[in-house]
Image 1 (cartoon, rainbow, N blue to C red):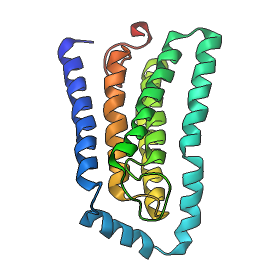
Image 2: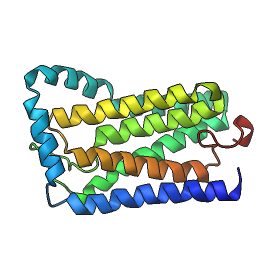
Image 3: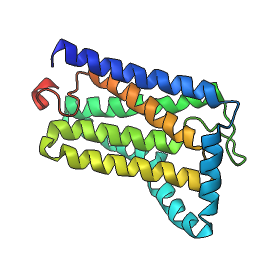
Image 4: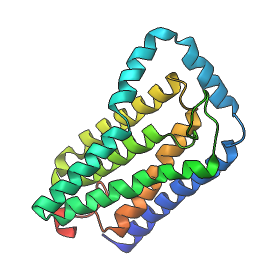
Length: 205
C-alpha cells in the first residue's frame, strides 16, 4: 500500500469521524426539520410496516455484533490466524463508537433509558458490515462488490427500521454510519489490513 493511498484513506476516516462529532453536537439539543419531517413520514406509513421493521430490528441488532465478535475471536484463537484476530479487533474498535452516545445525551423520539445519538443498532450493524467487507477483500476479493451491496443493504434496512419504530431520529443513524466507518478506516490502517480494492490481500496481514 503506498503512502499517498494511506494518507487519503486516513483523511477520509478522519473526516467521517469528525463529521459525526460535529453532527452530534449540532443535534444533541435540537430536532432538525429533516428529522421531524422523516419522523412524521414514518408515522404516516401506518402500523402495517411496524411488524416488518420490528423483525429487521431484531435480526440486525447489537446481538449480531456480539455473535460476530465472539465467532471471530474463537476462530482466531483456534486457528491461530492473525488476520481473523485483526478482524475481531477491527470490529470491536469500530463498534465501540457507540459509547459516544453518553457524550451527546440526545433524547429519542420516544422515552428510552439510553441516549439516541448515535444509534446502537446502526453502529453495531455497520461495524459488522465494515469488518465483513474488509475480511472479504482478503479472503474472497472477487466477491467484494457483492459484500459491499449486502453491507449497504443491511445498514439501510437497519436505519430505516429504527426510524419507523420511533427508536431514533434519522440523524442518529447517519451519525452512527459516519463514526463507525470513519473509526473503522483509521483502525484498518493501524492494523495494516488492506482496505477494499487497495493493495494485495492476505500477505499484507
